[in-house]
Image 1 (cartoon, rainbow over the protein chains, first blue to last red):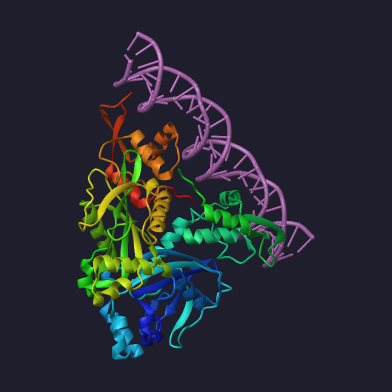
Image 2 (cartoon, rainbow over the protein chains, first blue to last red; image 1 turned 60 degrees about the vertical axis):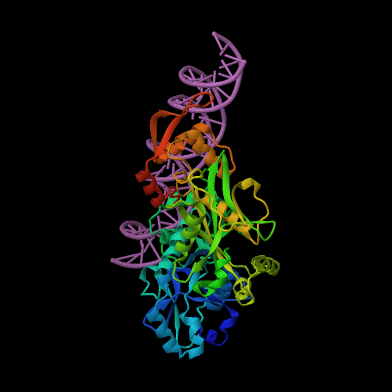
Length: 251
Length: 251
DNA sequence: GTACATTGCGTCATAATAACACATTAAGCG
DNA sequence: CGCTTAATGTGTTATTATGACGCAATGTAC
């Protein structure tokens, strides 16, 4: 949430915000990009508002690009949150006080907000967390060690992860979360981390191979302890095709 | 969209609406509840606005109850639509003209709207379509014969059906769309209609039975041509359990 | 009664999944 | 160097799920 909006709030869709759950993968951890708010001892999801002349998807892309410094990100809307009590009088007061919002602009911040949740999958190494103001800090945090969040942001984060888990069965992932070349154990670890469940190495290999989106390289990973694993890349064309048509048909 | 809102628009969340895709099943057809608008030769999804003191889910439930006359409906938020160009100047003018909205209230109708889509599954025979104004008419229409809809309502409807198809693999359905007692061919026809695909009778029986949510009755359907089929009921307890835990695990 | 459409219940071949065995590779270390 | 260790690569097997059918039973129409 930026302060600048106080000056030209009439250019934004009233009472509507965007919140992004940005996932990255590093050190065998599923990480979430979170912002330490300057006005309270809590963290928040990166978010923003919707300019009147922008699609909501575009507004979400903007948040994402601004916060990670990279473009062409995997981004998906997953839910909209609009309980009345998600708006918190105490929170509003703290924010208004901290940013010293002038009286006439307070109406913007004290109105009821509905927020649209997006989740994104990004390459941890390519994304460089960007501060918006000097007062805040922005960090990758292990999804298992998320601190206290403002408002209903914990609920939003949980729903994003739940959605990601379900969509893991409907589409391939990894292209957006892993570096270009990666090993099978790395890909497996990604799945295990998201699902919070151990998978059998050999069955995983067979199943992921059957999807037909991987190309095995001749190359092997170097500088590793023990036996060097093969390197793989995604076959982007087939990957996109499966992404479009879906995996399990079911019926 | 009601006219009454023009008088007290300050009690509603600005620029936000709810649209409901209400599905029913009858005569082997998947039907959608649509409203013939009085102001244009097009149809629309039943919708409404969000009172400032109501959760968005509650606002959706209200639309649904008002339009079908029944409660305890299966209702699920599936997406939010917020392209800039979904707002249509020509459409606004027609609506303003038709309802003779006074000048000072026009601002409400000409603002940019973002709409939250919900889909509902209801028992066709129990739901009684309710008009809101005398000028409009409300009807069940076969989803394959949907007439031209206002704004982006066709896109919303399509997305609802697409979501329903995907969720068919993740949860059981039917409890909300069929009468209490039903036959296996009826249930199968429901699946076939939603998926727009023929299924093998015998494989369908086996698969649906394996889910373990059906109780077979001694009773048989009467007054039917040819061999009388068995009647079934859902085991509500097991049904709700599967609904909660999901079907296909995948990984 | 017979023809016919539909239902109930079964089989069989194939594919997908879960559980597990064993050889291979490279680093660390005496 | 040879041994240990901890990973990886490549299988096998039993079980289960799925897809494609066969056939007898039932109730209506004639």
